[in-house]
Image 1 (tube, helix red, strand yellow):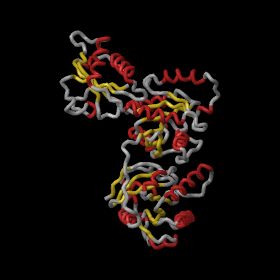
Image 2 (spheres, helix red, strand yellow):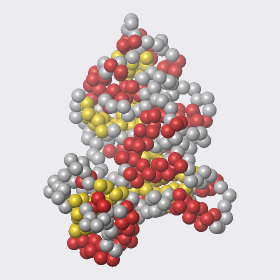
Image 3 (tube, helix red, strand yellow):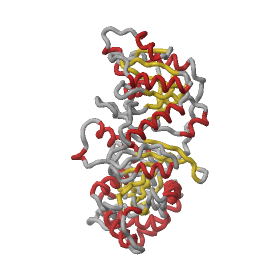
Image 4 (cartoon, helix red, strand yellow):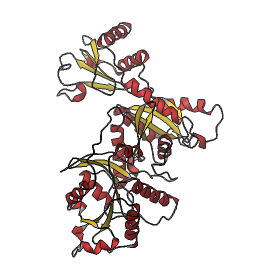
Length: 473
């Protein structure tokens, strides 16, 4: 059996780790992504019945028989018709150049085409160990795999990715030509997701931050469909950047490809520590942008509001000062999120995004002792006691901070907490932020009746049978 722990896109730094890279290449719609998914045993790349579904190179970590390797799925090779397609084809060649092993995929039920010959020639010319994968054998009534020997590739395997036929044989052959290597995960890595509507400049910012042309950038909506990743070092810290497909309004999300793209954007939020929410300077205060900000807040992730394409609008020295209060008013439900104006074209404030991400990550790791928290709690309660019903006035006795929650989360124990007015919760959060900062991150306040299991039982955030009420701002 094979085990995977997926990552996405091509990380150039992997070459220094001596972990083999296997590139899957072939013309469009021969089943490359299906093979990729069959090896991962999960839906990672987007698979659909239309040619050219995969646009960016997608990478995942895989392991078979104690051999770790990186598996790269690429877009289908074809004659580029415009600059956009040329960029895709160029990326395929880069993936093949970076690979240690190349799998050329063809269709068992289709005669050899000129594109198949072109792919095979490119692979053989590289001098890398090359395998011919004759896919879709389940659709070929009379298959003689030796017919494909005309492509000049000696090592051949017949597969049916959708039925998992031949996959183990292919992986077994792979382990014979690659060294044993293990991929080590860095738990200290900071994960940053770039989010926003389609065509707001996410991939351009991604490339500017990564300082390399890794994601495809084109002046058309919906270019990025999968999550692209790049890992860089900044101020001695490893930072993983995640570029996501644009989140469209729900009424405009089509079936199939766009649906999976939205799921990946939501997945990127869950995988991230800090999110950059991009808003086009030419189209600010859009309702969907606010919805995405709400999704990030609800997930308990760090947030930076990023106005992109700042170079593309007419402005003077006062434009920023005029827009900032308007944006702050629109996003008053995340008043703790810093606002920054950027341009991926000119590089304005791009580096500051790294500084903000590191600062927010440090803030999210703030730990306050129980004694200090309770001193603070007595102070805010004495200054402004909580109001309630007759004989039902809330009493707040003590509080602690959850140490195993990446989002700053606090449990406040007392009696009649269900009668605590929402304005008092806001009052407490405001003073907690004034005292300890927490800029760029939501915080969670859990108000718990003192008889509910807490410290030595299940955490309120882990799903008690009687869950307490949660307040996250």
